[in-house]
Amino acid sequence: MDIADTVAPKSDQQNYDDYLPGPKTVTVSEVRVPGGDQPVEIHLAEFPGRPFKPSKSMRRVLVAAWGADSKQYAGRRMELFGDPSVKFGGQAVGGIRIRALSHISKPLSISLTTTRGKRAPFNVTPLPDAPAIVNPIDALGQALTGSRTLAELQAAWGQVTAAGHGTNPVLVAAKDARKTELAGADIGEKEPA
Image (tube, rainbow, N blue to C red; front, side, top):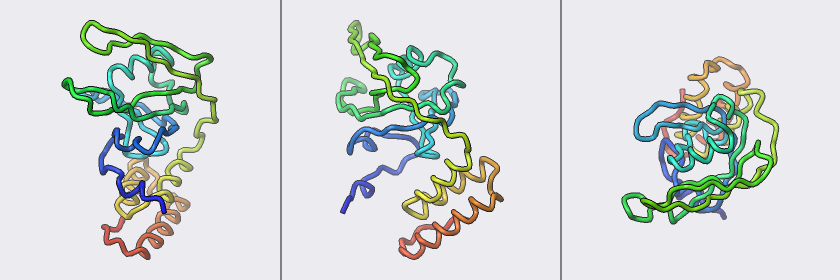
């Protein structure tokens, strides 16, 4: 029995701990630039409501590979992995790094700052291109049916309604069916509307 889901962090973003079991290939659904300490949010089709917030080094990799216009990123794919050597405040705390990217024709080596005054090459390999998600309804439906708890289902339904699809009969049916399945498990979470 796989218990990896039981150790998943409860968070509103991707975390290093999410990648302890291994790398994940994800699809960019949208990029937002809210500013602040983590100025870029890369929303992922596979994890609605839990964006990847890349570090400055990983943003430099994206700009070098895909260009500065983040509007072009939707539908592109990344392989992300957890790197335990990532430091913050001089301490190794772990972080999320990019291993491979779609829409590049050859491996890239980008010189990144590792510590003050030191740089090292960071390598990214090509990830085979896959068709972009053409229909956002499909991605929203996958988020509903892939919910593991009623809380996740409620968050996924929040994404559906925020996207203006709360009356879509296919999505309503998917939500209701998954709610029934999860309620049958009697896990005691708050039910979605």
